[in-house]
Image (cartoon, rainbow, N blue to C red; front, side, top):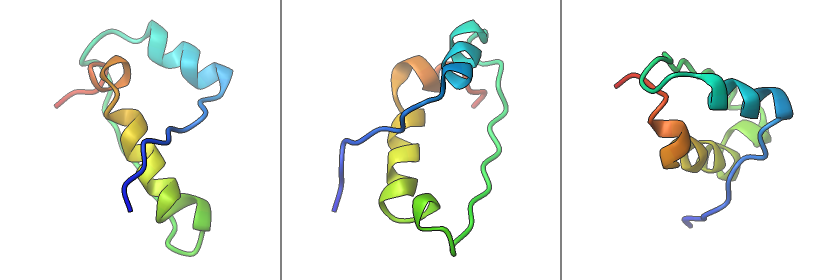
Length: 61
């Protein structure tokens, strides 16, 4: 089931993305299948969040 929920970024993470130049970040993500927050809905929230334009434009393609 698709959701539109997003992550709640920490203040440090928000500041980091705001101050980063466009297309300047290499994104490496590791998750644990045993951690419910990192799979299923939690993973979907992460994907939704990085696909938002204000975050996505910071990531190198």
